[in-house]
Amino acid sequence: MDKRFKLLEVRVCRGFMESPQTEQVYSSSLHILSQDRDGHIERLLQDIVEWEKSHPSQSQYDGFEWFDVHADPRTLNRLVTNRILCVKLKTNKSITYRMKDVNGTLKALCDYKGTFISIEESKEIPQDLFSLVVGHDEKKDLVKRSLKSENPVHFLLWGTVASAKTLLLEDLARLPQSHLVLGSALTRSGLFEVLYNERPRYLIIDELDKIGDVENLAALLSLMERGFIRETKYRRHRSLKLKTWVFASANEINHFSRELLSRFLLLRFRDYTLDEFINVAVTVLTNREKLPESLSLYIADKTANILGSRDVRDAVKVSRLLEDRTKMDVDHILSIMKGQK
Image (cartoon, rainbow, N blue to C red):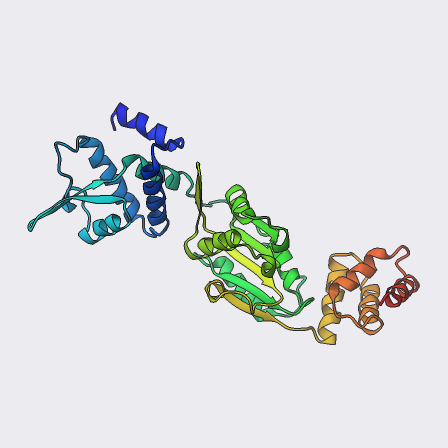
């Protein structure tokens, strides 16, 4: 690569844009690169840029033919359709092509290559993953299998309130390189910022049904389908390629688009039975809140029978309000809570 071309590459990769045509070619090139699963398009565009560098004067060269860049003519026609190349000469024997704007394509290649994230950090799964989640063994098995998969499998946990969905997500948040977000707390374009800045291997979204704006949903759809996100605004172009597993929860899924639901493996959670609630509450209170098993069992039983609740969160609230850690103190707190209903 000669010195003149190196200077051009540095200038373009720093964000230089000459004209609306450069912007358009940049956007088109980045879009087609985002769909490049095997790297073929990236290599082809690099070869074409090299040819353009070696043949700068369009007055002396009609353009390159398919064999000059080792390309399939159908692929070149696809680049023409996407307004990255243009046909300079067409005869019964041959077709020649030129790039519409070298700067735009070069910047797209630079940004695409520069933001590709290959995560090689720790992938170790905690041995006690889901130890606090009682039951749901088949669901836990599928999720653990996905964590060992070479490529992402995305899960949507949906169903009634207080049915272990959040417990599962909170445990998944212990995974290395994970990031937990609340759908209700995401601002406009917030998901793109999270992905671009945190670059998680595991994205965990609680309250997916609370995400309503188009930009966040578009970023999520693109991430799950192609592992690629892009922001294209006036004088602001950012892109990122990630290998990210998505785990989300929602109470209702009726309003989700088919396009979004098709990207998830759906796991449905139903209400706990009384026995299931007792087992789950005791496990959480003894392991997470560090209460004696006998007191944990007492709180779980009274929460179900006095408050009429099968929400583990209610049992946890009682445990955290205790001062003496006695059954009498539990009864006192429960009597106050019942009176507020």
